[in-house]
Amino acid sequence: LFSYSYHHSHHESQTMNLPDGLIVSSSYEVTHVIPILDGRPDFLATVCIPVGGLQAHRFLFDALLLKYPQHARHLSLNRCHELNLRFSEYTKGNFLEELRVMQAWTDGDRTRKPQVEPVVLQLPFTEYVPKEESEEEKKRKEQRRKDHAERLRTLAAERRQRKMIERQKTLEGYDKLVVELEEGIISEEAFLLQLSKGGFDDRADFERVHKQLQKKVEDTIAKMQAKENPLEDDEDNMEEELDEEKRAALDREKFPLLFLDVSTLTEEQKKEKRKQHLMKSAQEGRARRRREKEEKRLELETKEKEEHIKYEKNPSEYIAELIAKRQKIIEMRGKRKQDRDFHDRRKNLASKRRMLQKVMGSGSSNGKGANEAEDNFGADDDDWQVYKKMAQTRGIDGEDDESESEAEKEEISWIEKLLMRYDPDALKREKNETQYPQASDFQIELMVERIKSLEVIYQPSIIGLEYAGLAEALDGVFRKLGPERRDRVSKNVVVIGGNTCHPNFVGRLQYHVRSSCPEGSEIKVCHAKDPRIGAWKGAREFARKKIFLEKCVTKEILDKKGRQFLVEHDFSNRYYQTPK
Image 1 (tube, rainbow, N blue to C red):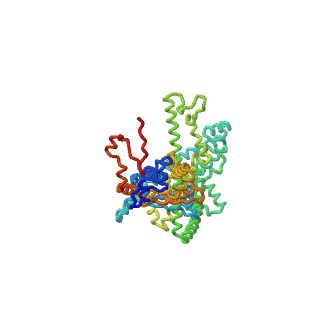
Image 2: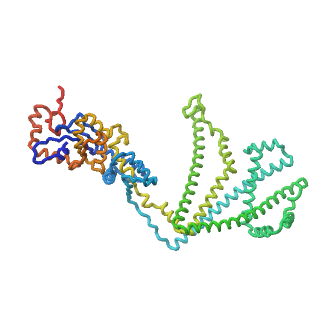
Image 3: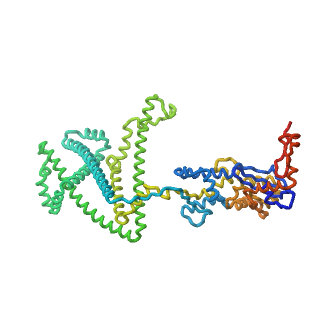
């Protein structure tokens, strides 16, 4: 009221008559809508909303804390107060429509420009400056890298050797089972019973797994022999160049037992025949590998030419695509690892839950009734074989996962090879960006927050308060006043308070006032002379006038009428005598 008086004051006048109008005051904690009629505030039509600038600052603080939890130590209520003062604005019209425009702009639709643009705040951080390494340090690092790689190769070779031995033992068991069936040592029924115990669905499933395992063993033996005896490759190459008849004669000479009937052989000869069969398979595997190697070489040359053509067209875009593709593969591998870890955790949790139920008693721990079905999956260890069977549909005990992982490793190796050729510093830059803090890691972006934090005055439900907003409060005041008095106050709407000094507050308020008044009504909405400290200036002017002394409560009045008494004036509350 003092600020409203200061806004309409005339210094030469000794009276404090207030013109008709409407005060909209939004301060730090509350927002008021007060109609002024016939020089007096109409308190019966006044509305008070317990929302102000403090709630807006708290909302911005909570929103940024939820969006950037890693920057919690840089956020505080005082800093959010400052951010609201510097960057926040009220929407000019419909808030939800402005949000849709912002979302469309973020998604790439540039048909309509949003009211505000994103503001990026740079937080303090220590920039990483890589130190220069001497030649000796580089050599030591390179040597350590080579030693580490050699250890990894040794461990990988040992792991492959152990896996190879296990596969050979499994293959020998499969071969023995097939030979016993062929020689009539076991019947067909006993053979199928053995397959069922081994986890096979039928004979076709067994033959498929048997062939796959045999091929893997042959390929592995061929690889190992090629590494250990490179001269054999030359001999096999010479044999491959021979015509078919000479090659068949050479096979009969090297592997004579393969061409004899099994019934004519002794036990020792049968073992030797199986050995010769593996050797011949290994030889054929080496020949096949040489052909595949040559095909891969030709394919690699073609692929390198195609990649070079792509690089020459747009080098920067090509490098960016390679980096993005490599990052995508790494993320896919990480997600697959998380899925495997989740399955392991589920199995462990199920085991712990069953153990707890055994300790606590036979009752169900999940609160189910006696008539409700209980989930006992995992109580029997055989239940978990379902995952093994699911893996067998894709390969042998999840070999597809292994081959997929190997294919991804090859793809990553190929991408890194191209990066080293066309941009040797790309991987080093990526390492620095991921391993060391960057400026972008210490930034806060304000976009929706610039308009949403101040919207709590118009929509207190955003922060969980069940109060009407400022627009609904205006409608309520106008309904209480009626059409005639509404038209009187809508001609002089004065905006007061520090929380109204944000951009577009007057425009937004005028939008709602016009929406609440009939078409063609005369409307005027403006800021007070000094919205922030106008109340103090108005009180100062009131204290300078002669009428001030008449409105003061003297000691004699206080002693006579009591401490609860006050003298009413244009800026005071109404006095209601306390009942005796």
